[in-house]
Image (tube, rainbow, N blue to C red; front, side, top):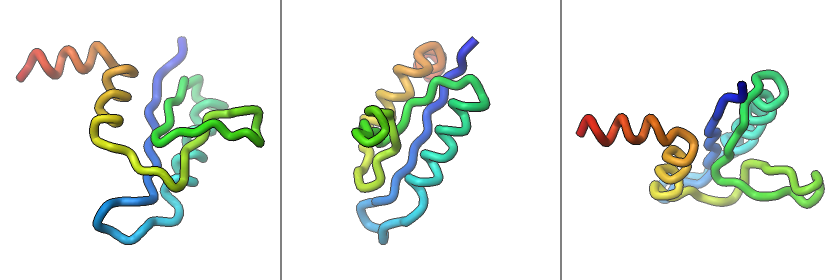
Length: 88
């Protein structure tokens, strides 16, 4: 049975200096989970790498909005989102 993972790698924050390694580290984790953990991985931010047969990769110079993150969580874990909203 395949498991789901959301891997977020953000190098740029609005009021902070840019980070150098977050996106690369996130991509390494995503690839490890896909190869060794039977995970279906969703990356944020994500792009298709034309040099790797359009493989999904973590985008290094792109931000993520709170709405994008919430939508990704609901898509991957809809039963958890329902449980959480029912408690509120």
